[in-house]
Image: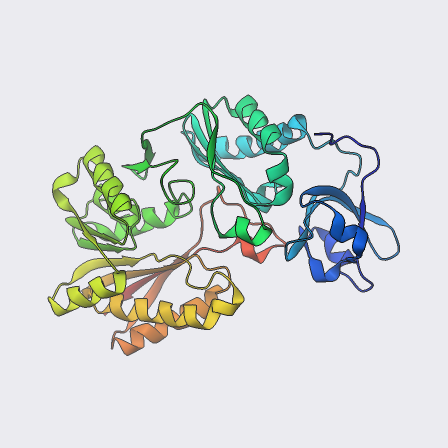
Length: 400
């Protein structure tokens, strides 16, 4: 496709639109701040446009989607930039330098969307395998150029495009997940925090593994030494495998997915902890209730659920769910033990999440102290003008 045309369609802000915010670095403009006339609405999702203020002053080169609540995603200030393989390669090279400074091995999130200058794009790297999530229309249109640049810059032999997920549905995007380069039909071993995890690239959740919890896994592993650990909503072993690597006596992983638990068991075997690792499949709330009825208790309980409040309409219900998780989790912590509560909900900020967790502790009749509050790892850089890019919360509590 031709991305080098000298004249691009113009999208204009409404009077009193957020022009100053865009000038200061805001990466999004919501559609209700744009002049959406017949011409604008006729543009194909993903069209590259020039954003102007209401006085016709150029602001930024952007990807435009008339079908999304986020109508504008800012790509840069150079209106004449050619968005091609070379442009992507420059962005990827910059991201790679940062990851090489942070990590000794090529297992990390390489591109964290707006935080790395590629709005709506996620790329996770697993050695010579990479997974792209093109969650914005502009990136979906230019996926071939992005994949070619990724292979050029990193040298990966296998690239998978994961086109599932809520973010793409909100953009009105469709398309089947597929291999863009090579192909890898076995789980990929991923070394992290002295444990080995197995990432199912094409059949797992999202990209196959969650790198964002890496520093929180490490902090929890320090608390796990010599203790029995309960890892609820464990996915492929998450906190449990890190805890065993850190010296835990045992770890029990709880998840609704049989596939995820099978990968967790494989990771435990690869890490040399098969005999001290167990799994229990089912609804996490029901299993926590059953464990309490059985009189079970653990020195460390970790609850890392999916996003209960992914957007504002779900906030109140999500906070009630987090409160319930905290209440049930606290009831399973042995005296003097630790409780870790996590949230990846964009709509629930740290203050709201903390308040919900503390209500749950109160209803469980447990008191304690907050030891630490964690966030995503440094391979998930936060865009300074986008609160949504700082989404992960982890609260570490010492219970009485």
